[in-house]
Amino acid sequence: LAKTTQPISMDSYEGQEVNITCSHNNIATNDYITWYQQFPSQGPRFIIQGYKTKVTNEVASLFIPADRKSSTLSLPRVSLSDTAVYYCLVGSSNTGKLIFGQGTTLQVKP
Amino acid sequence: GAGVSQTPSNKVTEKGKYVELRCDPISGHTALYWYRQSLGQGPEFLIYFQGTGAADDSGLPNDRFFAVRPEGSVSTLKIQRTERGDSAVYLCASSLMPGNSYEQYFGPGTRLTVT
Image (cartoon, rainbow over all chains, first blue to last red; front, side):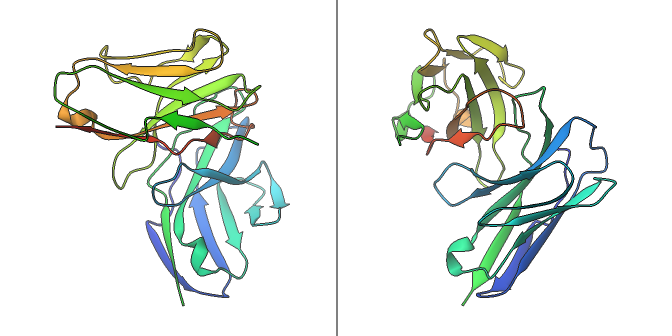
């Protein structure tokens, strides 16, 4: 079973900031938090990964509170091309497999 | 550079037949993974290799499924006596090293349809 809970779907409009929150109450000390994005007919693509506090890269930010029981993916100023499924995953550096849940389907409208 | 490639992109087979799905990982990546994705679901882990050996095959659904990576590069997923329930997209991924701290690079998948 996936170790994370996230909304099934979200709607947004172009230019808005989108925040997707993921719950992972049973996260272990060795677990990392990773987000992947998947477009139709493509394999998932890595977006961002963090362990604690805040991580930012050229496409997104990841906010992780001190207790690490949740995390928030922030997408600044989304465009239509950001319409995709976003997966939140937790897993340790000791295991290779990724455990995916159903993900959040983000629909960006014009 | 070249990403992960998978062949064929589509495969239609009859129930009971044998199929092989191929994955070419990114050069130099020691870890290779197979996942299966059904419509509307997230990918489901099947097996992963560290080098030539299967490090974790806990996701293989039954003994009809088998995978090899004889030279530590290309991998083949083999399905015997296919069933209609095997219809799905089979995804392959590779990473520099195993472990969730390493980014996995996914291929486009092979869509398998069992009629």
